[in-house]
Image (cartoon, rainbow, N blue to C red; front, side, top):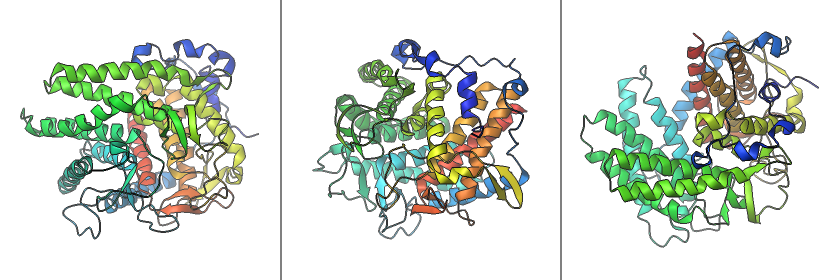
Length: 482
């Protein structure tokens, strides 16, 4: 059995074994009203060389650094290629629409998913904080964000939608998707509210005290958040993989975070206090549900409770969407919790043994050997192969997300040998992504679990966004080591 590049080590060091976590449900969120899991005690006095095996190779090489830089540029380019703009000839796409992928057959992903689009917009907004970004590119990004706002206004105004704001996806021209689908997906409006709230924050910083535009944006936010307050407790909504019905950890955490951010913005803009009060109260009610997702018997956070439909074979309830929830919506206290560490540990442990590609532990990048960690998929029982149901595979965006998890732990650790080690572990997951990404940097949704070649939707926007997000956090982690 190989030493599995860090997460097992983290689980051991941070006391994430099931025996330690048995009483975790009582205090895993700390203040339940804040819905934050018990934070790890991570003293900088630890001697990393004593704690970790000496045979862990250093993943970071100049070749890996160069690959990450090149992949960053390629990923940003293709994110913008998939983001229709009023300044471009968009063909059949309405300005502001973001396609999940340009692939129109085998599989057909040429739609604007509310969730995927909002996650991409949150990543694009993060680019605006880069002081090295060219001013012309910043202007282009702002135009696209304004287009996204107008696309949102259009979607919110559509009539006769069976699931209202909970509709999962739309045609790229902004018309409703009427075919059968797994609806409602109520994480979408929450994520869209968060995306526009993040843009509102940027607008406020640039407005020199004029809040007119901020109030216009907040009106769109209120439409989505008012909807969330009415539906968050409903059973039978679909999860982010569009396969299970019930109450989902990812969805609830997205909704809670959006409501909290919306309440803060209501206070900032001096909106009627009753608005903030309604959002705060709903967020607190959601907070009281979240501890129920800790499974004492299994020792990890489960993805779904109160299942009412969907696939029946997902018996483990172990799912990478829990990690995504912590990355996308969690506070630092949640992200650095023992419960999340235990869940990630279990995920990596399972997938390391499930996929043939994980038998390979090193790869060559531009002639240099680099260690690689495990490729990670959605959940152990997955059968979706990117264009059918012949067996699940590792996903590019999920493996990038495990890299990001380690980089973000390193940022929260600050300078020190353990933080350095976490960056090195993150790099082994980056190297795994590099191994299976096309030579020209094209990313797909999945990698074949046996051959390692790309499968599923090509130029998946979320895959590119997951990479650039992980890379941003890597830069922050390395900066914190200086």
